[in-house]
Every structure is written in C-alpha cells, then in structure tokens.
Image 1 (cartoon, rainbow, N blue to C red):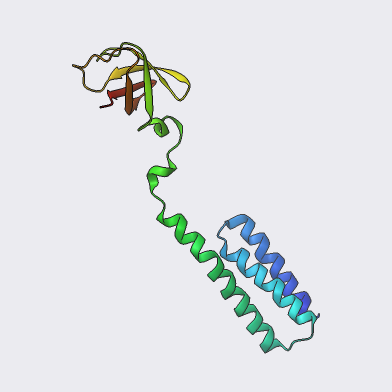
Image 2 (image 1 turned 90 degrees about the vertical axis):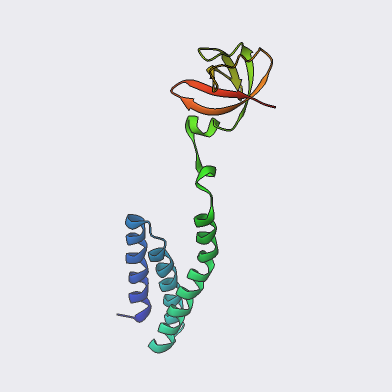
Length: 144
C-alpha cells in the first residue's frame, strides 16, 4: 500500500473521531495528515513526511490558539440568555409600579413588574432599570 494512502486513511479516521469527540485537536491532526498525504504523493521520503505532519500540526495549533484564548477570556455575563439577559436592561413604566404590582415595557415586550424597593411608587412614564427577574415578574428600580 502506498504511503499517501495510509496518510489519507489516517486523515479520514481522525476526521471521523473529531465528529464524535468535538475536541478540535483531532480535526487539526486530520488536516495535517491530509497535507502529509499530499507530500507523500509528491514522493517525499518518510522522515520528511513526518516533518510535514509535525509542521502542519504545529501550524494548526498556533492558528487556533488565539481564538481559543479569546473565548476563554470572555466574561460569563456576556453569555447570558433567556430572561436572565434582561437583567440590567432599561424598561419604561406603563402602569404605576409599587412593591405589589405594575407593568413595564422591556425591549418591546410588556412585563408585570414590582419595585425592587417595596416602599417605592414609580409613576407611569418613568424609566427604570431591571434589577432581577422572578418568574414572569421584573423587579425594577428607578433610574436617577
């Protein structure tokens, strides 16, 4: 069996393993094996093929490393979703908000609301910040 065929089979095996593990490393090694298969097809001897494989693997890792570091440095707060993504947003009071009830508009949606400080009464038309979400009720505090 030709050497380039062996590298091509290795690339396929690594590619399939990548699909099941989602580790990125196996995919990078699979791509390096493809480059090495091309080098073997050109007739390079085995020691140079191994050098091509090592260089392609290192280049892949060096190319992916900055992207991985950027993802690791992201703040978890920027990855909030669902109703928790509403915390910190600005809302507009539609109906007077007290410690018991009220209505606000958050990003085009109407929500039931309560004042975060139960002693506050927030009049209609006021701008408030969403402090917390409890179930389907926004706890809000007036903006100053």
